[in-house]
Length: 109
Figure 1: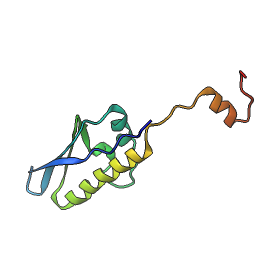
Figure 2: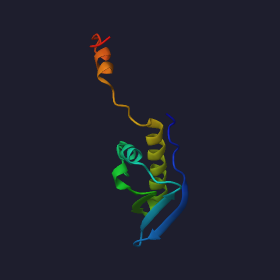
Figure 3: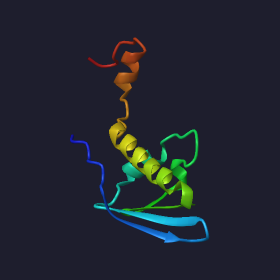
C-alpha cells in the first residue's frame, strides 16, 4: 500500500484581526482524509502552538496568532504535517502478533 503524499499549500490568506493579531488560512491542493486529520491532531508539542490550536476543514487549515509569531505558527503547521505523514497510518496488531510478542504459541497452526 502506497503512503499518501503530503498535501501542498496552493494559496495562503492572511487577515489582520486586531492591532497585533492575524487570522491565517492555508489552502491545500487536496482535502485531508479522516486518518490524516487524526494523525495531525495526535502530534505532541511541549510549547505553543499545539496541534489543537489549528482548525482543519476540508482542504483548509486555519489559525489565529499574534503578528510577531506568524512565522513560528506557519512553521509549526509544516512540522506537524511532515511528522504526521512520515508516521503513516497505524496498523492494528492482530491477535497472533500480540501472542507472538508475548512469547506464546499461536492458537491455530
